[in-house]
Image 1 (tube, rainbow, N blue to C red):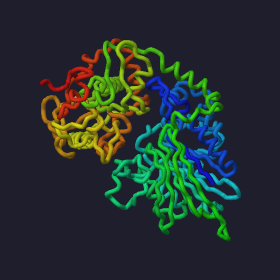
Image 2: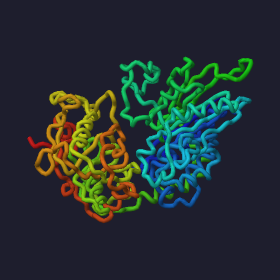
Image 3: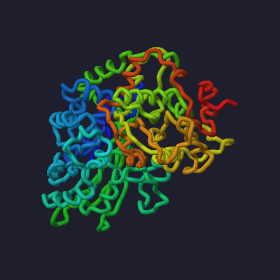
Image 4: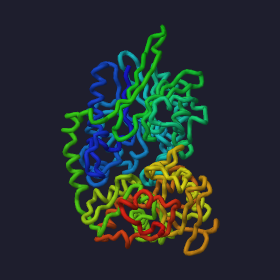
Length: 569
């Protein structure tokens, strides 16, 4: 038996990057479809295709057909119906556009959207179908769908009104026996959630995922919310699971092998994100005299690259959606007087791009009636930047690629200080006289911290000394010229992900939410640029942050010139 899996497609159908406006040969469901059809040819009667969520959000394609024009059949429904999925587990981002959009998508696909731990708040009953039972080659396969409970933390309240998100492990303890009692020979858990740790070595090395999970030297914490990624705990503590198809952590995991309470081996896999991989699970199912059992298992990932052609059927069916989205993002919305650099050049110094994002957030909060003391943002990718001259909607979206919403919160100085100190886990301990040859080499290697978890603030004066060990790098923290006190109160503009403790910043959950936006931050960015033509980087840039050693000058001074806020020698 063959189980094929996609996950975290995030509305990537075409091999195209809507944020850069360029082809990307290493992504897209149209290319995955080619791999799926090839796998089915090898095992035509005994193959199932499953997705584990974060499907209808992520690119401007998802934004357009989720918010701008939700009347047509959703492009992901069109593409996925062509591929012939048997089931999909709901992801946390399925709720980003509200329950009406999700319900419409559910009605447009030819397969069930599962979520056993998504319950109705009023009575605890099932809000989504919990599982599906299907017969494949005379073997009955049960697929249980689960989603990370982090939805309740990250999502806007109005988008999940009337719902609660139960513990996936406890939910599985209820439903796996039900699946077995209903005759399931093979039990598959499709969960939008992954391992709560990652290998301390190279996660790109398949062997690193086969290390003993109990060996603390081989694994590092991912900085999860409590219970956010419970896939390993599911395998280890719930009897009766054969395979775990996982997602959410955006990692290529060819194979993990875990032991259940009876010591039986459970296989876990994950196919990364954006249609960059297809997971392929091979099960040898044999008759033991009483029933079918999994006698052997293996898994691998098929990579999407230049050698994989896009499927003609999927391309033809979704071409109008793609063309509409390209036209949408290429419309001119503003102008700049000079370039706003992005990537590491915008992270390693107090940059105009970070200041612009913080100005946008503070301005949106002010329009909602809240004068914030400070704002925090991140440089999310290495590709997003603003060119000199005309700026398109695509350019604006490229500097804020996520559908985060804006929160205004009240926090104290203690929360702020702890968040600032944790912020520097992004960096390795550096030697000012012997810096790594490339800018990415300044980042911590274990654990690797995502670029979007390195925050940049406005409204406070602060600095870091990266020659000191993590935990003692903050050199100063002042507000309006005075040292910040732990009991001092601040009003901060912050996105919903960070406000809910995302990225391991759990201290922000101690704050008090004053307001949440209905609109996404990137839409505020676009509107701000429309109403503020000829934006000047120098006029936007306010120097309130310092980093030692001076990484910007070391890595970018010769090519990009001196930064306004870089130390003067």
